[in-house]
Length: 525
Image (tube, rainbow, N blue to C red; front, side, top):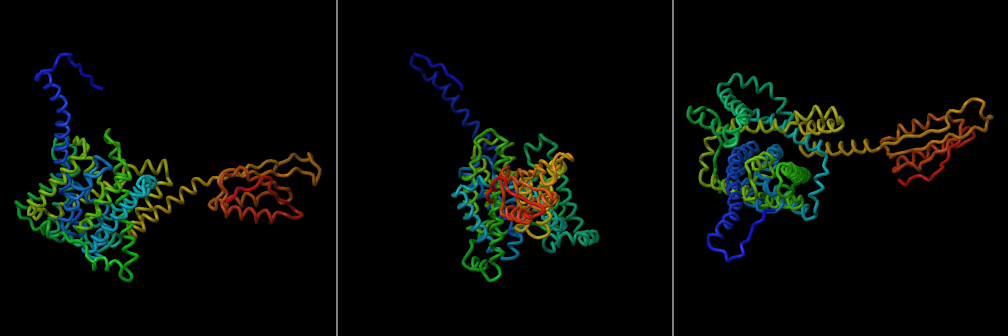
């Protein structure tokens, strides 16, 4: 704690002024740091907002609109002070499928319902429970999203249209390569997209420049300049204006979600929006908390902040919102001190979208596809896979199965399968039971026939149906001409399946040639 010496005489103007200056300096330095950080986050957010929107099959301005809401509304609310919210690559595939299935107007209805659910979960203080989700499932979810995102954006990279979902996109890659090789226009777009990805990978190595200009902005800006100067024949972003894309959901949009045959799919989409956006935001908050020494995240308040943002995004017909680790880490690295930086970043997005919408029309779509392919690659746990397989093979299997299931089916079913596998894996790992057998081997001649001591069998651990086959095999292997005393007092848990099976085994072993009896009461299943 800093201490100040106070003079006994009456202070003069000169003696007060230095103290006032010293007390004002921290606030000015904080404001300056937040202002600088907001500009950095803004420069990172612009290409990502536009790229996510284009990849989702919606107007580019909707991505900016979600970023604006994430800054001006969610940025003001309590929860996490430094993480930044906006449209995320993690929901791109799901949004695209929802738009294709229900239409652009219904997207707002889906996001609105998801936001309201997040508000309810936050009010019920369920935010902290998202920390209980298996990390392997989350990594598998992100890996699956990354694979589907890369497969889809490879088509956009050459100005081609993707044939459909994940399996169809993967199956069509050989034909895409053949078509690209025979098209000069496609090769030009590929060169733009590939150059963007190379620059994204190399720019951060120039640390001094990377502190000033973020890699996504530099890559997209250079690609735009090249296309503009040489007037290259590649597809560019279509511009409609910020007010022109605002489309609040109406009664017809909600009715489309409850039509016969659409309810189950719409419900799955809403749940996927809610769970994935919430989990990604709260996991991002945990990661951001490790990057700074300031106030830590209140998970329930952060969940409500995300819910409020998604509710407003739904009312405006915009993209769903999550906290984004790329923008959040950029915010922290740029020296942000308070939530003012993320609010100001929303202001800059609003000014850009309102004053310079025509600038988006010069951006080549192939460059944005390159940004998203690079983002999809970063979602894959390439570095984490080998140590995870070496140390926690079961977790690695859950991760891989979740990712493959998302690619083969869809987001909701893949995550659900991953959660079920994680639960089964945890149940198997905790279901350890073994038998302690005493008196099975007696020296010959130590006892007369018929007077041999009973075999004492003590079960220890957690007896569940997962270990039942092995448990019964061990009991069946005991000699039938000996008396068996089964002691269950060492069991911490005995489920109904095991209790019933042990009861049947005991009944079968009673008889003239062999007996079995309990020496302690069983644990209630």
